[in-house]
Image (cartoon, rainbow, N blue to C red; front, side, top):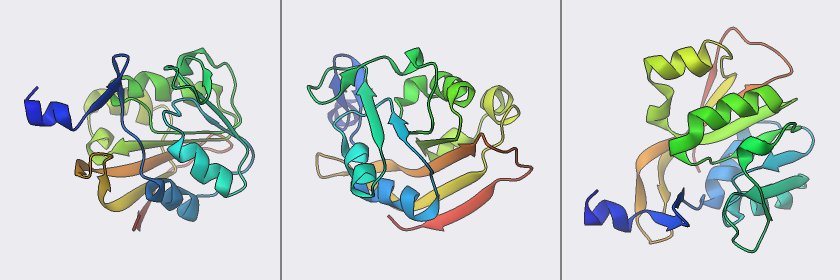
Length: 175
């Protein structure tokens, strides 16, 4: 990895961590309805948790890394969740999403790079088993804590486990 790319990435105890700009969480909440409590199992610095709580959502927050804010717990150790909203570590996203879809009673919403939507193996592992009901394309590049912007556009990918869908709705929104 180049020195420039490494400087754009923050790591905590060997785990990739990127804080989520609050506007990206607001973009989800403006365009998608989530009923009931939410588990945020990759809470990081709590940026997404703060936005959801400011909107009156009851949030259970945890993270694998102890940052002195939330319960320390492995996201893969949860056995049930009412809803999940998270920005998972991209290196573990597929495994986490497969797990979340099995344990969640309601909605699973994950913030991913738009390129995550492609790929034959991912299609077979995830999308052929459970088609997302909505993909929310957030226009622009997410600001990073170092003052620069992400090199990649991001999307919210959502699944609603209360029903099966035959199509995926695309929504374009500003942050």
